[in-house]
Image (tube, rainbow, N blue to C red; front, side, top):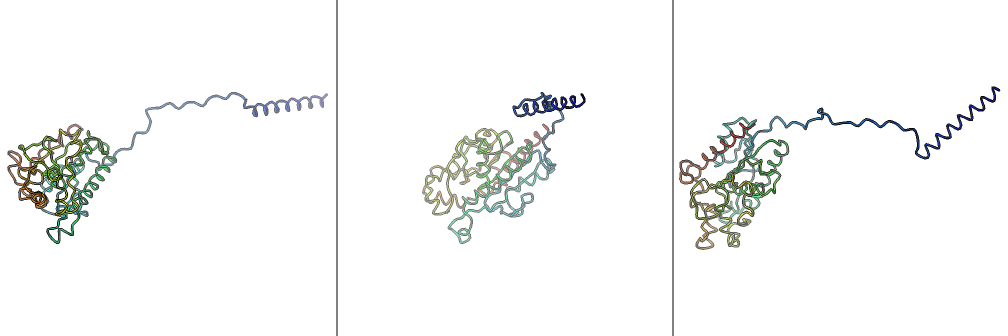
Length: 315
């Protein structure tokens, strides 16, 4: 009898094992409870905080021709102690802590090749210099924009630097730049070679002329003979787009860089005016005839401080 029970037990075990194998091979099996679904909680990790050095506002200053160098210190420029843009950047550095307002000056070659002198023939061409300055400035803007998402920007430039600043403002305003229009607090172009009447805001008096790159575009061949590698690109397509109401064009009357007559006499005179940049172009720091009651650098500093103070109060 005992042997019979053992045999029956073995048969039962074998049957159970066989049934289990059959279920495994057919994909069937005992139903297991579903794992609990993780629901989102308020404990989800927050995005990483910005670095401590990120400022509320970054002010980018772009010097003009012969007023910078590619190895200059962007926080303490020394390439040219008489650089016009120092009359704007230094007062802002003195007025604000770098943790609030980061004043950064574009270091670039800032040259303009011409055939009138031995030194001029050895310099970088205008096109090369402008492209270098644009790339350096955009590199800084893109770096800070990515690293410090809450930072807003102001850009300002003089002469060749004004052309660079205006080109970047054009890119931002037409949404062809990593910095969106809403993050640009303003742009100031002083003696912009691509200035157009009615494009941007003119805080000074009415001017009959236009930027030299527009006036001289029809005579590019003559310009190229005097200043090789200086492409006259004409007006900026799209103007300043969405930032037109806070893009400021400052130009002294009779400055042939930004107020060039559209009917200048001879082609040679046009090219000569562009290259020589008459005395008016060198007098913006003290010229009282650009903006009523003030000078170009003082107006720019006062405007920038007003915009910066408003941004700081809003935080």
